[in-house]
Amino acid sequence: MDVITVGADLDEEGRLAVLHEYCLLDAPADDELTTVVRVAALVAGVPTATLNLIDESRQCQLTTYGFEGGNTARSDSMCAIQFRSGKFVHVSDARQHPLYRHNPWVTGALASVRFYASAPLITPEGYALGTLCVFDDRVKELTDDQAGRLADLADVLVALFERRRQARLNEKLAIEAELRKQFTTTVLETIDVGVVVADADGHVTMFNRAAREWHGLEADASLDPAALPDHYGLFDADGTRRLQPDEVPLLRALREGLVQNAEMTVRAPGRPVMQLSCTGRRIVDDTGRVQGAVAALNDVTADRAYRREIEGASAEIAARGEALSAALVELRRSNEELEHFAGTVSHDLVRPMAAAHGFLDLLVGEYSENLDDRAGKWLTGAIRSVERMQKLVDALLKYARAGQTPYQAEPVPLNAVLLDVLADLRTAAESSQAQISATDDLPTVQGDPVLLRQLLQNLIDNAMKYRHPDRPCRISVSASSLSGRWMIRIADNGIGIPPEQRERVFEMFAQVDPQHQKGYGIGLSTCLRILERHRGKIALEETPGGGATVCLSLPR
Image (cartoon, rainbow, N blue to C red; front, top):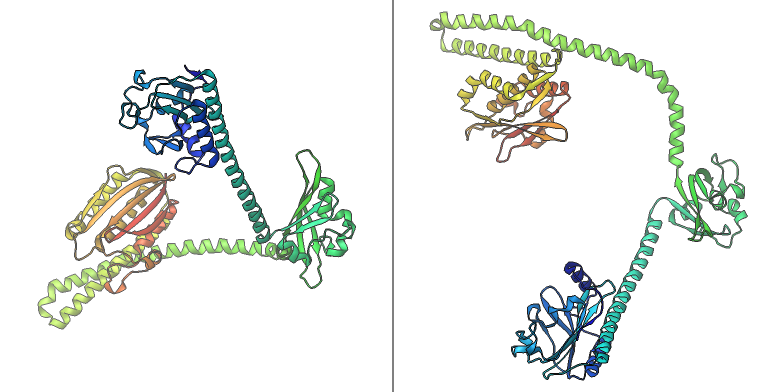
């Protein structure tokens, strides 16, 4: 005989979530649950009954009557076979039933059940949590009345589950409400915004910490609202006229419903004069009944003093505006002249330096046999000095060109530019035994091809120049896309740049180690100037394993 109770439960994930929400598994059953199980055995007229909850993998016998319960595998459970159908199950002799005859509770492996009946425990949402189960080792039949009473007892168990869950939820809500109250109080006492509350009659019922400090008094609910200006020293925005009661922002909010950015001055005895900006709102309940009003007070004393200073300075700023504009024009002209001067001087030095180097070469070639050792050393030193001056002049010329050369933007494929650079540096790469690699997907960027070629050549030449003496020189060029920009990285395994000098090395004539005299402190300054003309950025990072990585950021 089957008695259908409620709809079948097909959502196993939801069922398990509800089961765990009741917090019944592995918890001791209370006396009420134990009593219901005992009554179930009496109703059925059997010696044994149990309250079974079924989770993902097991059957938990929460409380039992007539035997000592425990946990068993869900696959061994008789109740797990049909409990999700939502039906009352009644089996007179489990040995004859095709669903139960091979179950270990029937075969003698766990027990020798003959009579078996179970009422599913169905939640209000329709989920089956388990069963109220009665059984016997003798064959037996239940009457319809007995089956109905067992189903009723299953409903009683679910009601007890619900009551227990509701009590837990109510306790949780009470704790959360208290925590919210404590949090609100803490916030009100911590913030530097004054909060003032009045009841429906205009009596001030609350000041937070900031409001108490500014007014120099506590909130006094017994005070007549008409006495608020005199009692708390409330004046107009200029601080010259005492407010009338109907001008007090809190009372206006109670009367008008909303007040925004109303300014007033508080003159409390023994306290600094405060200028406050007030925003208030009427408080109403769900039925529309007025409960009072609340106002938030912001200290604008410093802001107003600053505003007066700004207004006083505006005339002076206006008077200086023309002078500043003229100075800016003059500064731009001076910078342009300075760049032109540097380029011109450097260019004019090229020929004299070349001539001096040529004459020194002639001296070496024609008269070296007639010179003693000391004269030979002097001559060699002179040649080196001239060569160093030539390199310095060349670096200055590149720096000047980087700033003066007309910027002609066009699509520039960096792979092609890099091939040209490597061709230019082939001799230097061979002499330094440098291995230079690059990804095949360097982007095409919008820029000046001449300046970008100069940029890459400077950086790769630097990487070879400052290689590490104890390991082969390795240089790699790669690119990636980042937030609408291209990031080009030139990484080497050289001597690196200390973190504290990674900003300074971009300054003109700045050198990491001037004693080695490997450069002139102009190369990275030139790179910075080129990047600025391309609306880009340049930065330095450490290469993993040692060395320096130059990061170039260019607009896409």
